[in-house]
Amino acid sequence: MPELPEVETLRRGVEIHITGRQLHKVELRRKDLRWPIPVTRVRKLASRRCRLIERRAKYLLLHFDGVIPEVAMIHLGMSGRLFIDLTPRGETSPDWIEHEHWRMHFEGRLMRFIDARRFGMLDVTRESKLQVHPRLSELGPEPLGSDFDADYLFRVSRRRKISIKTLIMNAKLVVGVGNIYASEACFRAGLRPRRAAGSMNRKHCVALVDSIREVLSEAIESGGTTIRDYHGVSQEAGYFARKLRVYGREGEACGSCASRIRRVVEAGRSSFYCPSCQG
Ligand SMILES: [Zn+2]
Figure 1 (cartoon, rainbow, N blue to C red):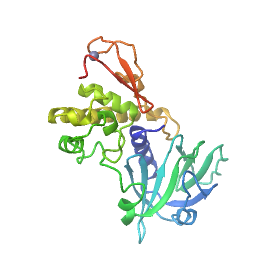
Figure 2 (figure 1 turned 180 degrees about the horizontal axis):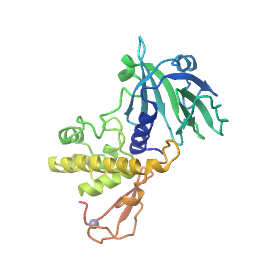
Figure 3 (figure 1 turned 45 degrees about the horizontal axis):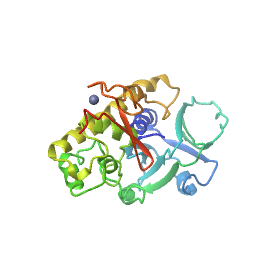
Figure 4 (figure 1 turned 180 degrees about the vertical axis):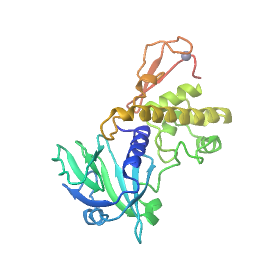
C-alpha cells in the first residue's frame, strides 16, 4: 500500500511532467472507484491549465486555474498507480491496459490511473472548499509541516493510555505515519511502541517528533533516488526497505547494541523494537 513517502515521491514526479500544462480531454471507463466519480465535473476540467500539484496526507491535489479554480483529488487507495506517458504530437493514444480506469490527456503528456482493487479515488472540488472537503477536513497536521512539533505532541498525548504507536498512527492527530514508519520512529526515539502515550515527557516528544520527520524524510529521499529508474511515474518508486532498522527484523541483532529485535502484535499489526535501546 502506498504510504506518505511514496505519494510525496509520486507528487514530485507528477509535478515535473504536469505543472503548467493544459488539460485537453478526460476519458473515464467507470463512474466509481471507492466512491462515485463526479464524471461531468471531471470532464469539465478540460481546457483548464494545471497550476500546482500539492499533497495532503496521501491525497494528490491537482489545482486547475479558471474563473472558479478547481482541484482534482486523487488517492491511490490500496493498489492504485499513476503513470505518465510522453505523447508527442500526432501520436495515437495507447491501448487501455487491464484495470486502467481513467486518463487525463494533457498537452504532450498522458496521465493514466490503474487500480486493480479499486480502492482509489477521483473527486473534484472548488479550491475555496478544499479545506472543508469531507476527506480532508478531519485530518491532523502534516508530519513534515511546522504545525507538528514537540509542544503539539506533548499536548495531544496528555493523559492518554493508548500506546505511543497507536497515537502517532491516528490520522486525526498527525497524518501519514504508517505502521512501518511508526516502528522505525519509535526505535530512533528510544521509546517502546507499546508504552503509554501519556508517559512521555517533553524530551521524549522532541525525540519522537524528530524521529518521525527523519524517517519520513529519508524514505522520501530514497523514493526520489530510484524514480529515474522507472518509465513514467508510479508508486513503486521508493526503496526504503533496505534501511529499516527494526521493522521485519525479529530475532536479528540490533544494529546499535546487538540485542535481539522483538516483535509484538497490537490490534493485528506487528511492532518491532529493541528491548535494550527502547525504554
Ligand atoms: Zn538495541
